[in-house]
Length: 122
Image (cartoon, rainbow, N blue to C red; front, side):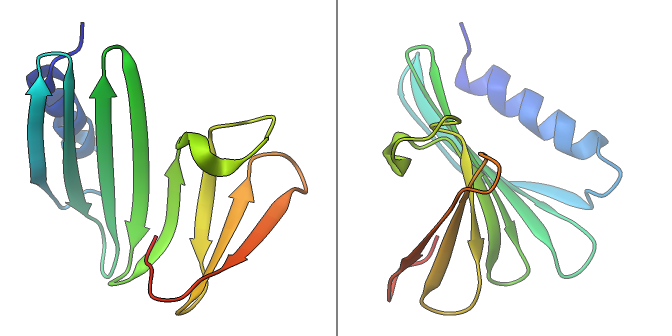
């Protein structure tokens, strides 16, 4: 079984071993139960980039989100189940192209969905 301490430690050690990682910070940790928890860590890459990793573990299921920033969100890869019918579901990524615009790219070749919204970040 995964624990908060073991998965967090593994994630931090992987990021610290990555040559592009300058510094790793734990931003959030919360344990709801021994087998249900989440955490968020961020590594600082060569300026101006940062990579944020969020894991939510719930009784054997792991949700992930990897988000690249340059002050604002640029890309996010995640496995949220609410992306619609995809052959790669739930795995997909988001590309942010300016305020109020989000483009969701599915891992299926040539498949792309654009969604406009206002006031929401990735």
